[in-house]
Length: 245
Ligand SMILES: [Zn+2]
Image 1: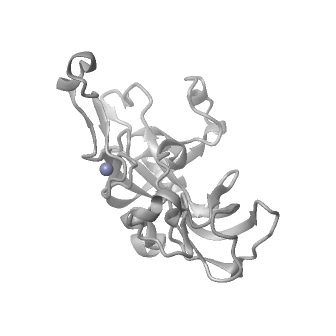
Image 2: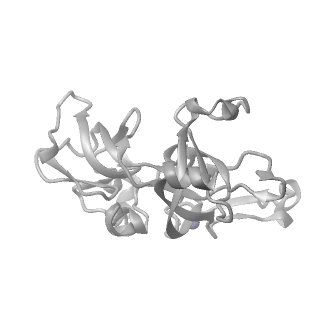
């Protein structure tokens, strides 16, 4: 297995994912009827995680074997993986656990694209909040390499020169742009991020550790906080973050 990963594997970025301090589960407050304190509390607008409830730390470049879910029928038998999910196998002895983040070092299209509201970070309720975005910036789900198609709700099409995608999660409007408050959709190539789900069962073979084999789900389907503010790393181009991808 180790040889297969070396021969066929690809560089991916692994980050340890865990609950942010804003996402605490208070067992003592569990009896809401008696204490009137909710057991789970989330602080919205948390500056540490931008309301995701999870933080990701210690990025490391590792080699992993990535296969699409359709190529791996043993996973679909478990019932819960969806089309577009991936399976990642890593070297024995390297620990990847549920909740971690994996980022691919190559770009590929964001399926279905993404719908944004122009200027969402500085409209309505967000006017009162510090968003760390300029008026001409919106936050994307993924580190964007380049645009495939961009069009607003009135059918106006925007060529790549009207905005800049620099490998960060920010789309910066520099030319003709959708009016503030207008919806637009963009399909783009991105360095996709994935959240690790761990299938049940250890992978051991006659007491040998075979390495982790985990299920990957696209991060935007898991981290669904509608906070338009960027996280600390979102404004840093992906390749600068990991040094030469
Ligand atoms: Zn937080």
